[in-house]
Image: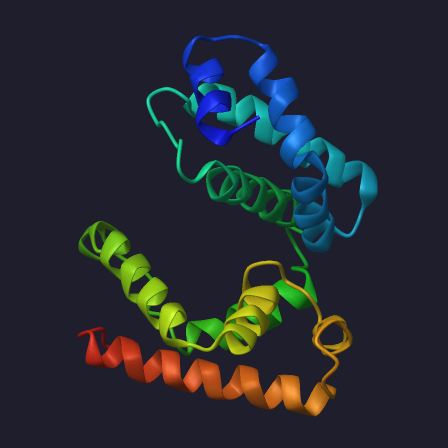
Length: 186
């Protein structure tokens, strides 16, 4: 079923929308959650929570053209919250490591003015990603969106781990430069 039809089912408050969403995107959402929480049962709970959250958010949102991205963002948020909850006193090493890498490139919103600028920052990052060639963009997204390990990325793209690390380092530096050119102070 097409995404716009699934969204229409949500708007009509038809419960089959959840079943259709599960059939079309369930496996991908579970995969995304699993790579964050590293636990199959928790990943399934995150997936189910995603359907409930989508039910509550559609309407007012109508993600007809970007349903998977809408759902993936919800799943990622729920999975990261599960990690934070599970490891309140001791944060997951992977999330801390990735956060440390990215905070050197992306300004953290510490006040209301920065939070208002979130949409512009999102557009600037998307613009940066659009300028990368497909392989570099995929490596970057696999690492910082899907939280794949360097080893997993190197296997997926048949590259050495050193090459993946170098590519990520150079992409982060390019992102930092791009954001500075866009007027962000880092």
